[in-house]
Image 1 (tube, rainbow, N blue to C red):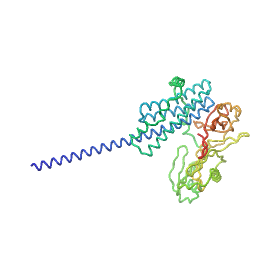
Image 2 (cartoon, rainbow, N blue to C red):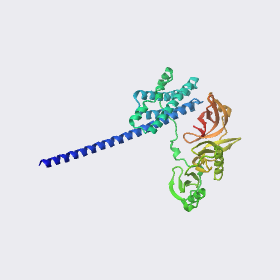
Image 3 (cartoon, helix red, strand yellow):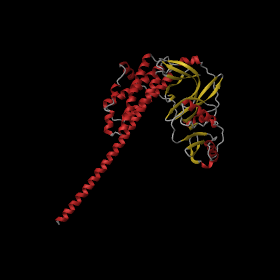
Length: 449
């Protein structure tokens, strides 16, 4: 009996131990899963915060050069959205209370100051030298914070840190100590407009946009899948029987999709146009310059059934050069640049072949437009420019609005005192500044943002 009791006791003890180990293992795995999920939330929030602050830095720089009330209002709306997005991301991060309050205060200052400038502009008070200086200071601090967050992201990625390490790194970003800025006058100004309602504007999500038809394909006949396959084979230079049909797609621009070897191409179901093409595969070592790539892109476009195109901006990276093109239209003695008619070509810098073509902008927007002669002369439009800018060149351009309408503008290529290049677009009918872009030139190309 004693032996049986001993065996029973040992058996129960082992079973209890196994059960306890099971509970411990399950709890450990649950804790690890929770930590992994929380770490992913932190990393995503940090990425959102870094993206918002980086965009804010660029917009603050742009705000220094606004010349009219309408442009200042638009830029203010961008800053409000960016500061709000940054604060939402900040709320998900495990900063200490002191550092969280410091960053939140800075983000609030950006949004509040943008609102104060918008209201001053609406009241007919132009920006003063102090305003430009304050925007410059805010932009400088946004740049510091953006760099610090970028370095923090890189360290977390390199070290594959856990939660404890993440919290430690977040709370030891030295730049956060320096975010208390500007003076008491600014604080009072920010508080004065803290309750000002958020700006509302007709953005790119209006219902009419999703119902818009491709203008280039207007009144053109639909094509069958077989007809589209023949067009795709002709474009790719391959036998039609070797094509593989990938399916149909698109919403406002319905297409048939085909693949062949390492290439894919989309053919519009109305009109049978190539809307998109991409060739995958390894990229060879670059041997061509951007000028050579532009020449190759133009030669490639000349073989396609497209209206005459002119290049605008380009960027090159990782052995590829992407070049944007647009159409033009005559208006009296002027040639109007039609930016909505966008075509993008990507050239491989090793052999010079085109590896990507995107004609979506051209297909959706191109038409013979009825353009009115400008009611505002170039000289009159120039009065809308910020006094901080010196115009270098000017011409007429058609630009898209946030609601995907189009507006004829005078395009001014300007330079600021510090060498910053700015593109300002002044409405040729009203004389109001419509858009403002910073022109970036570096070893990778020329971009407007």
